[in-house]
Structures are given as structure tokens and as C-alpha cells.
Image 1: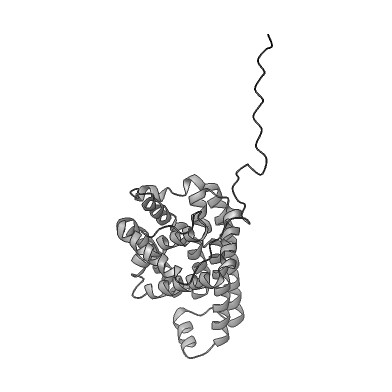
Image 2 (image 1 turned 135 degrees about the vertical axis):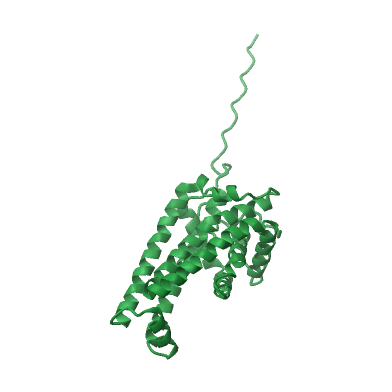
Length: 275
């Protein structure tokens, strides 16, 4: 009797059948619309109302940063732009806890302040590398700011003299150059980090892939991302009056909204539903 024939081995899947994560240059980017940034803010406000305790904690941190910035301006105005760069560096990482809270709400979970404070731990390697990239930009920004002051003033002015001279129209070239330098570096930090940090938190992506995806998102949607950046800047500027108290609410709302901006821009399956 012939032995039963051995079953043929299963055919190995071809390379085209193997599922793999898209690279940073292949990651699908949504086509955004001008109405999206206000929608993100509404979703951020809804998240803030659902976990106000967590939001107010981080809002107090933003408020304290504002008072520190004011103190530096009064003591050494030449360094205020460099410190502003440091705050732009700290802001997205401080928002990590807010991203974690919004993610928990989307999953139907109850957000926790303790968990939000530890949100960086699972991806600490990528977060540290990305922080290093932003730190380089911050150091360059600070150096450029000091150079602008050095070529504009024979001695470093105090805060009262600087404000008085600017209000009288003196050193107009300094004001224009100082503003342009700040705008360039702030734009670089925004373009690099607008969706990268929530992407690292959400997917465990490496820092380079997240940064490239963020840049691609801005290049593909330049008008909407510019609108989003200007909207954030305007809200933060208005929140500084009086005494930075507005940051108690606007800071966490922007943080929550930034999570929804990430979800709408690069998350699979299109925009996340509004809360």
C-alpha cells in the first residue's frame, strides 16, 4: 500500500502580501480644509470640559511659564526671545499629558492626571531624540536673538528703555529684524512638531519619521497649517492679558485641540470623531 502523500507545504506569502507600516514618506496625509482648525478648537474645548482638573493643572503650568517670561523680560530683555524659544520647546512636551487625556476620552476611558504625567515613559527614547532636535533649534534661535541685539544696541537696554524707544519709533529696524528672526525659528519648530509629538505618543513612531511626517503635513496643507499656527499665536497672545490668566484655559484647550489636529491629519481612517 502506498504511503499517504505528505501535504504540500503552505506557500510562503509573497513580498507584496506582507503588511508593513508605511514609511515616513509614504504615510497618508489628509487633505485639510480651512474649517478644520476651528473644529479642532471646538473638540479641544469639549475635552477640557470633560476633564477640567487635568486641564487646569497644565494651564497653571502654562501660566507660570508666562510669568517667568515676564520676569526675564523685566530683568534682561535681550534674553526674552531665547527664553520664548525654550517655552516653544517645552510647550509641546508639556502638552503630552493633554494628548494622553484626549486619547483616553476617545477610547471611552477615564483620563488620569497621574497617567498623563507618565505619558512620556513608553516612548522616552524617541521623545528624548526629538527634544534634542528642538533644543538645537532653540539654541540657534537664542544665539540669533543675541546677535540682533548686539548689532542694534551699543549696550543691552533695560525693559523700560527698550519699550519706550520702540513706542517712539526708534530702532524700527531692530524691531522688524527681531520679529522676523523669531517668526522664522518659531515656524521651524511649529512645522517640525505640529503632529510629530502626538504621533510618537500614539504610535510609538521614531523621532525622524514623526518629524518628517509633520513636515509633509505642512507642505501638503500649507494654507490650513499656516492658519492653525496663526490661530494658536493669536489665542496665546490674547490669553496673556491680564497677567497670563487666560492661559489657564487656552493652554489646555490648544493642547487638546492639537491632538485632534494630529488625528485629523495623519491618523488612519480619516479624522477622529468630535467629542
